[in-house]
Amino acid sequence: MLRFMRNITAKVPSHNTMPCRIILLIELLNVLLNVVLLHGLCGTIHCILLHVLRHISILYYCLPVSHDGCEYEEREKAKGIH
Image (tube, rainbow, N blue to C red; front, side, top):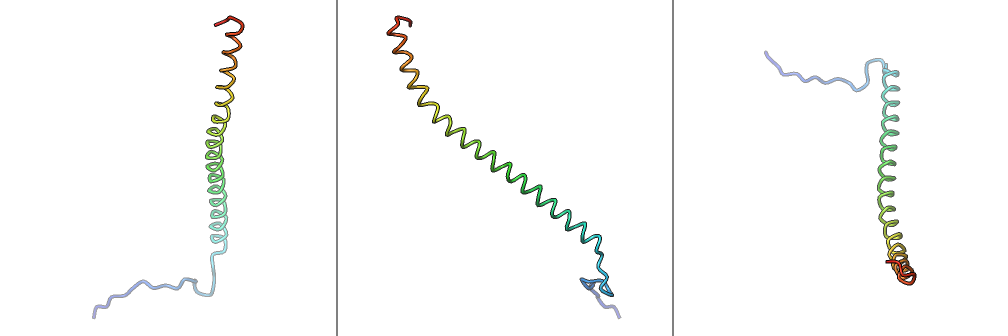
């Protein structure tokens, strides 16, 4: 008689012998991966903040430059230099 069988194994090997070195290696790699991902995320956040600050600084410096430009033109006209 033919019977179909499934490959069912226990999650824990017999005699409770867990491969401790492999588990430790996997946990270490997982920690390193989390550190790398977190470091990359911090870099992304810094880039976004720098981008926003550039826009703010452009807005901050455009107003004084345009006002200084008007004052500069008035001074030049008063001196007679065009």
